[in-house]
Image 1: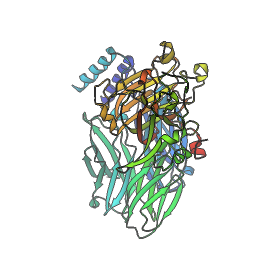
Image 2 (image 1 turned 180 degrees about the vertical axis):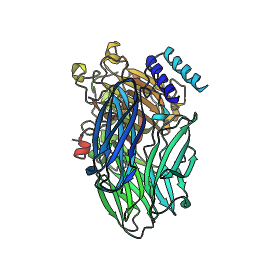
Image 3 (image 1 turned 90 degrees about the horizontal axis):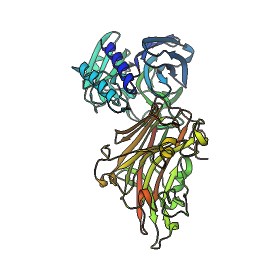
Image 4 (image 1 turned 180 degrees about the horizontal axis):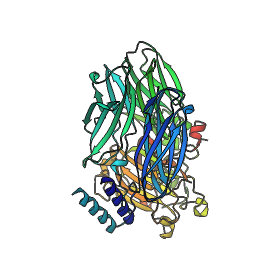
Length: 120
Length: 472
């Protein structure tokens, strides 16, 4: 119900003044498993809802920030799910890593979310 | 009731003048700065509160697998929570989830961090991460050597070391710092490095211009009765001071009208700019400053000009087509206010004169408020957040002005194809907008720090400040 209400508000808001932040939402981000040994294959996942066509950029923050995926997100969409695999070659050292998910669209402020996982 | 209010507010938004300032939905905000350490067997979780209006509480939930082993909430501003030692075991990996609630019980996005408990006590007691370096203070009772890992680097920390400085960090990048004993990640924190930082801990003018800044030059030296007369000064080094007051280092930019004779050549301001050295595309600028007085002819300003104008701008991006962002200007006619202004083709020339899209705010962030001029004699912070969505000004954390990118600006110049540099100056005006200075005039602006932090839109520029350590 809350999600429906949110989408309704998004639609009405867009009809009015298109305030930033209401145009797209990153509902959830995750990496699984949350912890694994060196050599483990990790999977990232993001769920997004947007009114405007956008781009989802996925970046792995390790020794360098490396873009690992770029996905086109359709406009007027509810809960599109994106996922991918993080190459174990990028995770050769034990430690905490993060994956950043950035949703952007020309002329709109981007949204960013982060998921953390551990390589033992 | 909430639904009715929400829908009512949306329709209210429809019928009121557009555009409205951007709203930030609580659900879209996350806690991006956190740290986890160990003290006396307990886990210490610290964070920076998220930027949410009406933040009510921060909750910390600790799980072992699916089982919740601890949960608790604290008030905003607390920024620390301790998971008791009887709830955690050495060698186990826990998932620690942090989130906020606003006054309507809307939840921020959850931040979940894995942490494996060590037998040693390890804690980051303080963490200061700047643009290209970090200063850390650690507390440890580990008997073995520690290693600190970050960004693919690993350094050994000798026993007894408490203060660590790390250089050669990349600006605008997310780092996770992990302090390890043996194979355990016993203390961890994450930060994004700034794009630029200066706290003016210098001794001489040469220090100031060694790496970040160059002097501004005098403008229109032969033009009398002009608002911008002596705006950019020359011989700046004579009018730049460095001082420390109550532990705060600051830069003082002075303006004079020397002597008793009316001679425009004796009107001297001071200014520095980061042109050709540091420039950026999208980010948040915050400057802590104060004024001495408001006098006729006094014209202090903190502003930005294009290093690279968007190639799509008319007339090669020359002023005003390439844009100008005035973070703060103050003039004598309204001494209790500062101006937040942007200039573009439409706002400056099509309107038939030097107009700009400007608003005036007092220290409480109130537009055209009466305020008190002396409030600006104390330290205050002005800021501007520049994103793909537009420009937002802040006075002491209160949003004072918003210019959306989709506004009807004609040739909107503040795009991803542009980059801007910083200017700070104390000008002495010969008339017009800022009033007319008289012989004997003396005034100054003090600047405690300049901080530029990245946002989700930031494009880090390959500028000399990063690549060759200074101005070219």
